[in-house]
Image 1 (cartoon, helix red, strand yellow):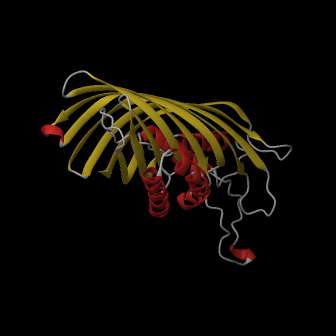
Image 2 (cartoon, helix red, strand yellow):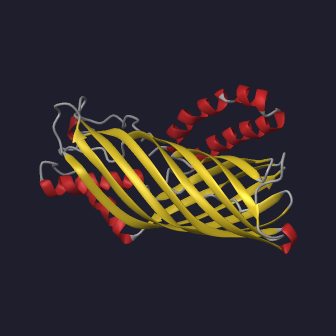
Image 3 (spheres, one colour):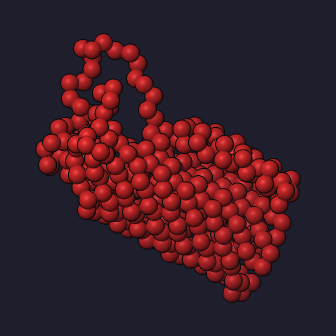
Length: 318
């Protein structure tokens, strides 16, 4: 999908929130907010829209009136089963979907690609420390915008436990720019069904982190479980070559759970952060014809698989 299209869709919403933050958070936070929007535009133009959504923050919360801004890359790589499902679906997209085997492979591939979305994506985040060992953050990862809050408990001088809750808005907008002009003889003879849907949705996740501060505050390590849920709804064109084409409606639910671990090293005001995560994903959904256009009809799709997600970023604290 086109990450630039996603950025163009999200940036007006970020800019529209600036007057609000001027009133309630002050000019310093708003400057960080505007810088975050600029980083979104630059990063989204360079990378794709993988489904990785790394935390890249330690268990310890930021001090009150301290903010952090970071940019990096969040990756998500599927197991062999996930990759095979997607590849079979892409191959089936160019075949007649009247064949039951091709239609099944296509439907499962679309669902897996939309909900797991293996690949690399930009990671851009801004966070602010709040009173009472609390913290709030806003993170952009190519296909989603995540707003979260968390609370930390200091178990000792070095050990901290934190519990967070994140809410995400998801927007999938594939690049549908018209192809270069070609003669009728160059037009493919077989219908090419769209593989990446135009879709939007929402999600939520709960990370529980245990962290240790080392090197007298110049480093951190953290690890723990993270559970999440996503819901998507959208549509696909059944024949991308036809001026008017039948559409398919897609609805999908995505439950996932896994473990993550990360570490941070740096000298104020800059830190390097890295994180590794693995998760098991269970997908379910429907792929049905829109109206009377015809096409494959599946109302009980299911798929599952594992992913491995390495991520890294440079973070500044101010």
